[in-house]
Length: 370
Length: 130
Image (cartoon, rainbow over all chains, first blue to last red):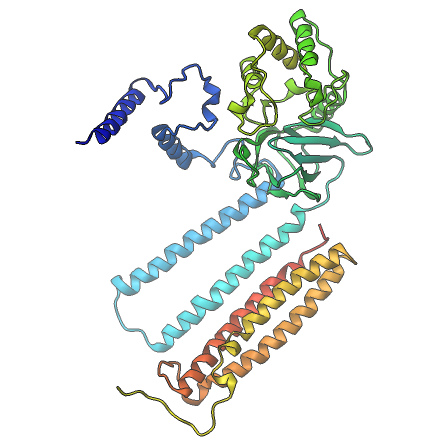
């Protein structure tokens, strides 16, 4: 055996064994937090990938917060119904066609008259599919206008950025939008109008549990409307390739009862609560000294940057870094220290030059912005 | 080497040996498709709204179907099926070439008519330009 090949074999053996024994990852970064497991890495770890692929194939997509088959809104329900009808029809047709094939070629071999064959071809090959497709098309088309109905009451403007979401709420009668980011909250019981735009490159907004997707195109405004029905936490995802961190451009979608939503929105409209503890106050000083306000807005403070996400009520969101990290102090510190490691290509610079105390204070301040 | 080749005194009309005539119906279908999309975009963006779009789609569909009926009828005559009930055209002769092209053109007319109707179907349902 040639040395290179033997080295390859040994490497495979040892990694395979180590995975089986103690689930150690291939690369020696034991310090890597568990929540980063969902972040793609440069080294490809085949075995966990295969296992997760099997899991996804077996169970994924059937339920959960990002599934078209687990609808939580009227629009998604229609799409799911259409999908099940088409799947059922496809299964029936498949069994029918293969049954006929089996019947004529194995079960009962005999000659058919030319007339029978022609009737079968014309009836089964032209008339039947035309009728079936016409019915399916009519049903789907009859649903399309309702998917694009005008919203009533709430209008939300979502702008796709690289790689996060700028979100502006405009309730009926308001003229100043309430700015947020990376989370879309909608009330049940009404149809919300969602206006979409993109900054620089294309994106597409999709919350599978709530409805279909709509592209976001630089220089023009597209729209969609959603009618959520079941309160809960869902997840949206960018579905149009938009650059390095396209796969890491997600967001939380939260559906709330109308009263709870109104209360939440009132709170969002308020300015940021001033920090209380000493650690938090020191964090605000770090925030100011590092010039964070050049890119981020914290309403009620001098920070009024518009480049990055609005942070006024940052800690109220379920996720950090656009659906990628949990809203915890450890994740926040990791993000501040090296955003590029979590989201390749991100525009936010790293603050790894800060010492642990400063980073911790900064995280405390940010997590106090509820 | 023998080869069946009939040499008629008068060459057959161009239509009887042209593949362009065979695909005339799908061409009408494609023009209808492009026209309907362009018209709908224009009427929604520049003037009027869904009613103008719907009217234009109706007119374009009627015109396309009429054209396809004419093309299909001519293809049917060219196939000449009822004359000899011949639906196998595998010889390199003028007659078989004519019949093959007519047969194919006729079938393509049928699918083009279905295609045009399916393309026009959304006009029944659109309530707005949104």
